Image 1 (spheres, helix red, strand yellow):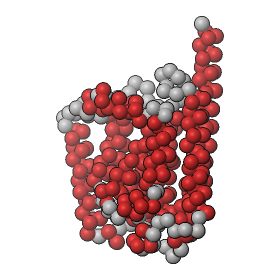
Image 2: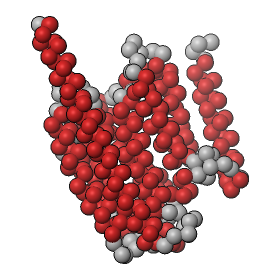
Image 3: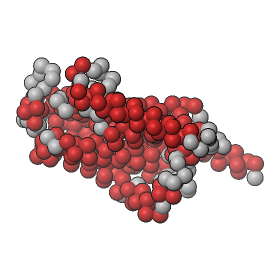
Length: 298
């Protein structure tokens, strides 16, 4: 009975997903804002299963993370769900500044919260047994090592932001649903991986970076974001006519839409980096205090 219970949960999850899929397919305009405009199975399954495995893992780990970290993780996953599986996704496809808010959540705020949750061990504990060897396989760990390399990580973080906002690329992606999903997935995954690298509370080793290294990476990513945000918020050229083609759902000019989007890249992005620097400094102080206590005991 205990063995079968998780499968009943998966079955219930599939029923809920199928229900959302049908009602969003046939009655999209009549649904409240918290339900999907366009239902996507991959986003629904990944995010709901992450929460389910997290809840399951909490019962299995010997030492669960503090409550505030649990809240951070759940809040980050819910933020991803709001961006990807509610009416906000519709607005992000028809307003540039809403698109930038969505990507701010995926690449910064939501990813930051998930990283602060430090709940990878908990989610792993909640995974079905057949998935654990796949997740911990050497090729997967090697890929993660490459993506979180101190040189590659900031290049990817800034590079993806610039790449998806190249006018020719952006216009094409916004009119191509599979590429649109790839763009969102890449920003979310990269955001979680980068902020997990920066916000790791452990000293080096076992962490990949020292506190000094983390602070340096924060500064490395900050300037290019400020430059891009300044260009878009101050330019008098409409770089993204695709939103005029698709039709804006709010009464505003193309330049106002672009200027607001640029400000979102510029200001909230800067505040996220500032918050990350504070976290790094606090973790450095706490690690130094622990090290002093260990030396005193020795």
